[in-house]
Figure 1: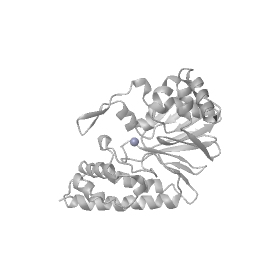
Figure 2: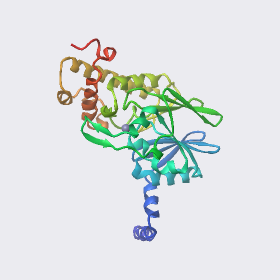
Figure 3: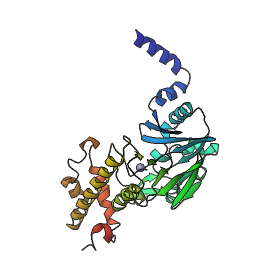
Figure 4: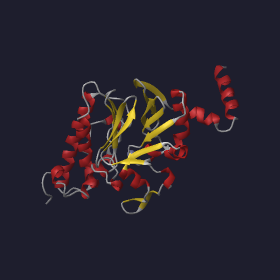
Length: 307
Ligand SMILES: [Zn+2]
């Protein structure tokens, strides 16, 4: 009987156009306070942070466009304000930039790496053929970009945004809160799935390993490491994941030096047994291996000149 009442009240709610849909979708998000004024929001596409400053909210990472309304409704409810000051895009994919179209008309500062802005403004093709992105309207592009580092004032200190070089894409950035000892890793780290590199926008498996090394310099025993998706981790789990990827990529290099093809590497599956809970590693192996092809002069990762 209670179930029926609930159904009836849901139905009544849904007759108010659109509102119910947003309310129901907002239930897909959960929040947890990580530090003073920093909320971790987890939803279907993974993790974001809401850094609540005295004069508005700074969002670290976006959500896919289809979740934008529900996410923003959730943030308003959680923080008690709808004033978003800035949003940080950790790379160009929709999972990171899907709020921009909603926030740009409100004058929100959209922060990203210069390469991310460049990709968003371009037509992107996969392997020179299939179009995977059409140019974003200029008014919705990131309006504050940087190349190496950018400090964003927050609660008397700064959020440090830094470049992860050529990893998942060539525009990846992380967000580091030194006072609160919280690190949002950007797209290199997921703790619930393989994170394939996007070779269409210069993602590179060698750079992916480097990104783990440079993030490791920020991680100490008390750091809260927030991955793009999956559970928050500490130094032990971060180091374990870093070592796993380093070893796996070494094995992929060995296969490259034996002139194996990407298809053969997927079949050989050097990732077998590593993280069964993450599902099929094929895309990670395939795209990661293909990303060697554009980087064959990188003797540092490839162990000397290729034959
Ligand atoms: Zn991505």
